[in-house]
Image (cartoon, rainbow, N blue to C red; front, side, top):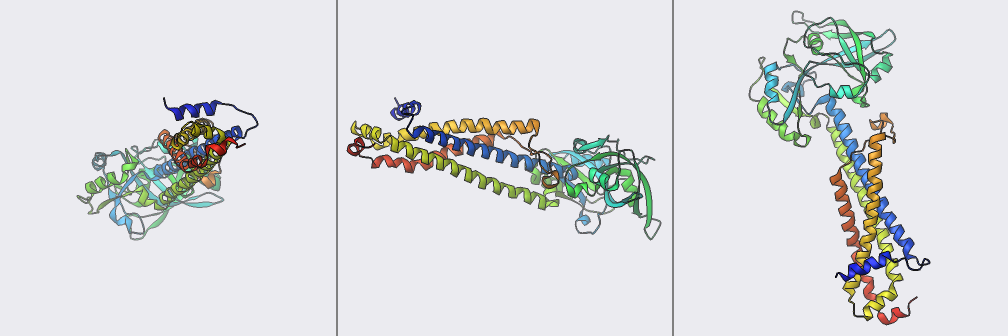
Length: 422
């Protein structure tokens, strides 16, 4: 029989004299562990959810990897590159790439009778993945994007643009561009009518302020580019954690040969294009480690306080055990097992409350945020059971480890003196 475990069970289950301070000390220690675990679970869930949400928004506008003209990296304006259907299939065939799509960017000005706004038109074709835009749609319906000349020029604008220009779904608006023609030496201004088909809102100011969507043929025509010439191709990968590895494969694939105009291909990742955003997201991990360290420290402090109170209160029992021949090691193990019970109950209640709050937020979204400041209207929480398990194990082991020192207090108790201790 494990005597320390048996004694610790009897100690924990014994109610004793209600005037003693051990019961409140046990409750306080249990509550301290539970609160610390709740804070740690919520903190990790919020940071994981926030990082995933912001990353998804950035990727929604720029994909994982962009294949562009090498000159675009140093030129003041985007340079076109030839990407036909065959080359697009070639990019899809790179291991780790699950989707490829072309796009054409063009600068322009949206103008109403009262106001005007400089924007960036992103032309997309039928192969474009519109799932992100559909998820963030707040009004209207997405049109079918085509790569062919048509009289209809659909326009998808952000809610920010709609508010500034006082536009709604179905309104027609004039857009002004600087058009380049091969048969003319100087560029000329030109205006084109567009129809607002839908309005999106991503809460990412850097995108909502400037990006609107239309047919790829429209933007290609405005730039004066021939068919199959694009600003680039956007690639989506199967696993974001292997982004750099897949990008290396893409670079090896595209640098083999130039396009028909002699332009060289290159590939960049979304983390390189928006390095400031992703560096900022990485800094959030530092806050998580600080909070975890503080919460474990608080939990450990409450456990140590409770253990010391219990040891002092059980001085006579310790003296009797020593008089009966019990060694200090056995008594120390008894109180460590006793502390493990306290920590265990604290972890149980902490998990129930912490996971419950995360699940409740995921289903109801009762915690609201200022979207203009935090990019989301509700506190995003992502429950990672592996991280929760690791937090539980770390809390248990660290709390027991810091109790080893205080448990040596039992070696200072002498049987003869403890008999007279009250």
